[in-house]
Length: 77
Image (spheres, rainbow, N blue to C red):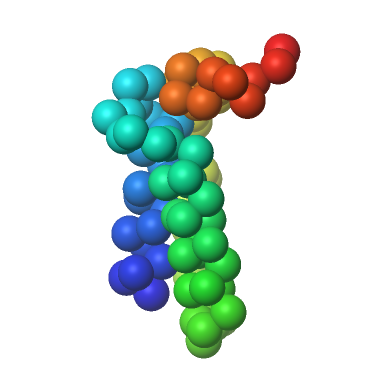
């Protein structure tokens, strides 16, 4: 599960940081998504009975702007 968490954290960086320093962000994103899919296929899930607090409140407009900044050629709107 720790490998899955690492992959998710790396993808999340595209939404948190407006200037991710990578030569080919698109290729990196593709590899990360394939890695997550691969981990999903091999993970053994355990049902979690824990009652968690409410989800955190995110500024989705800021996240959207960061993703647009990192992948501007894919953003059409």
